[in-house]
Length: 203
Image (spheres, helix red, strand yellow):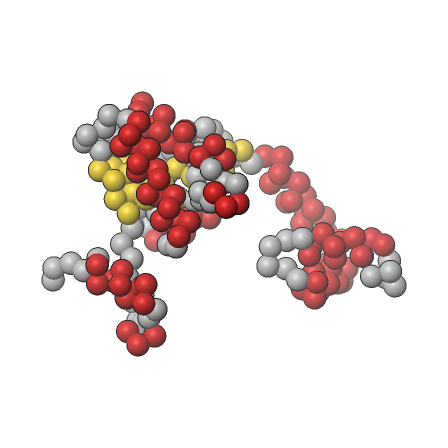
């Protein structure tokens, strides 16, 4: 990109580092900002700086927040004895949008992946075990992503809990998996159909 001004090339390069953004999209974003009013570009820059300077991790659930504890952990109307374990903060947003879950969360910030050097110490697993040991939790819901790494993470944490903690009354559950509403059986993959059959319930 030696034929364009260095500041433009630098911005394209930075945009291209974002996940899911290729060079073409990075160029479009850069020229959109160039055409935008200065106030728009300034607000974007300020928002980026503000999110980096003001966002912290909740000391209880490790979700991203401006306050500690986060609004969910600090809400007394939430079910304080149910914890939903998720991989990322975005998973909390997805579950909250449903309006169906009223308990607390624990964010791992990833999934176990020995091949990629991500083990127990790289995630917030020990913090979860300490939390279960000190708080009166009756149920842990594993809402890790479906797939090998998510299933491996949930299975490993269940073993850690059973082997390292004495919590005979703790219930460990996982999200049901099956067919999407409005979907056709013929288009469902084998794993989804298999999960739907295994997770069937009485009518």
